[in-house]
Structure formats: structure tokens, C-alpha cells
Image (cartoon, rainbow, N blue to C red):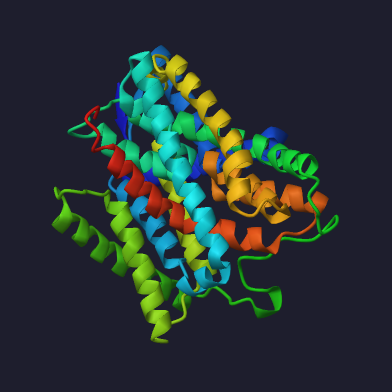
Length: 400
């Protein structure tokens, strides 16, 4: 027996997934400590319930997926609209050095993932999904590329399940290894630290300067996202099938970034960063809720062993890379150690995990203003762009 939920029923289900996730996160310390997102917790719980209902009661649910793609594109557009090129100048030379280290890791993550998959005799797409797509890209990028791999010409049926499993594992691992890596570097290298205490710099307005979200401002922000979606999807359709094809979300991200800096340079409009962030965060949460609650958990069984091997290799790679490459490239000082902790966070999980890692380190050893400036710039925007180019390059290899 199958029940089909229309647009409104599906929307209600997505909101229920997020509320379920919030409930369990509030009750379980582990989920809070490792910053596991609400849609991941709620989505996996609902997916398990739906799987059991289908198996034992023979009842299946079909959801309306008409707004799934727009939600994903809106999220990446919000990332583009948050990219202030003026802020990149503040990062100075170290910003580009750190970005170079991040780019090198992306290549290595894919090389390790694909190489391990080939050695174990499984689809190399499993290695790519267990590489930079989910390790440095997180759930959003993982789900986006899973959509690509699930369709022709790849037709990899378990892409979404593999991506979500890898991204969730990476999120937890990134929160575990970051702090110990920085502490090891501080003690082993006897680094000079600023002293205990200090708070992270806020990425939003100061309380006494806070701009209120209103209906008028929301419409303005929504207009920017709508324009970026329109132009980005048009560019994707025009350039599709070229020598170097990129997913649609990359074009939306780029158009958003260009639009934001164009209107600010010409003083046409001041982008409301906090509002854009809220719209993007809501879009991603609803998108992930849909993807996670509709995954087929049984498809993970055949991938359990190869995915486990690949993910253990990725964690090992991240730890050694942070200690021997990120730290050395970024100056071999305390700021470099904090950057290494942050790199572990979004190199295996997401930018919030990176910030949490750095806060834990700086609360103990002292503030690193440079790290808190650079990591959000790289982790919240630049890495998605570079990662897309690296992934597209790997897909040109003969094994695919």
C-alpha cells in the first residue's frame, strides 16, 4: 500500500523531521557536543521508521520532491551572496596560503578515496563520495553530488545513502580530532600562546548595531536570491555538456557572489548578511530533511565495509595533513595550530565544527584573531568553489 503526500503534506513532514531532530539533540549530550545538525538526526530517525513501516506493515510513503532542487540551489546562492571580496583582503597572504593547503587536501582526499575503492574492487564513485565531496563538502555538497551520480550517465543507486553516511561520520570525526591536534602542536612545539581566555570574533553585527529583519528587508534578500537562481540556472543550461561541466549549484553560487559584490561596489544596496544566512540555513535544513528521510538504509549494507575503510583512511590523512602540512605552511606558530584545528573541522565535517574546534582551543590557550577571520572565509565560500573544480577534474579520469 502506498500513500502519496502532496506539496503541503511533504512540507509538514519536513518540518516534523526538523522538530524531531531538535528534540533529540536537546535530550542527548553527544549530539550537541559534536554539532550534529537537526535534519541529520531527525531525518535518519524518520528514515528508519519509514523503513520499518514498509518492511513489517507493507506501507510506503511517496513525497512531493518539486521543491527539493530549489531549496538546494537557494542554499548555495546564499553562500555566494555572503562572499564579501573586501573581507578577503583582510586575510592577507596567509588566507591564500591556507587556501592552497585546503586545495591540496581536496586532491589528496579524492586520491585516497578513489584509490582505496579501486583496490577493494568497488565503484570508484564510492571513493569520490567518501573523499572531498563529503569530507570537505559536508552534507549539503554530498547530497548535491549524490543527485548528479544517481542520474545518467553514472546511475549509482546508492549515492545518496553513501554520501549521507560519509558526511555524518566526518562531522563527528572532525569534532573529535581538531582539539587534540592543536593541543599536540602547542605542546610538542612549545608554542607561545596569548594566554587563557578570549572570545571569538562575531561574524554578525554587534548587538548595539544589529539590523532588524523586517518584511521589506526579507523581500530585498529574497529578490537577490531569486535573481541569482534565475541567472545561475540559465548559465547551467547554456553551458551544460561542455568540456568542463559543473553542477547547477556552482553557477548559482558564482552568480550570487558576483551580484553581491557588484551592488555593494556600486552602492546600490547593502546586503543583509544575517538575513541571507537565515534564508540559506532554512533552505539547507529543509533540503537535508527531505533527502535524509527518503534514503534507503538497506543500500548501506553492501557499502558498510568499503566505506568504513575509506573513512578511517580519510581521518588518518586529515590528522597527518593538519600536523605536517597545514601547520607548517601557515607559519608554525600558535595561529597556525589554531588554523590546523579549524582545518580538521571543515576538512572532515563543516565550518561550524571548525569554529567549535577553534573555540575549544582558544578558550584554553588564548585568542587567535587571524584564525577566526580566515577559516570562515575559506570554509564558508572558497572551499565550495575549489572543491567543485577538483571534483569535476577527477570525474575526467578514465576510471569514471
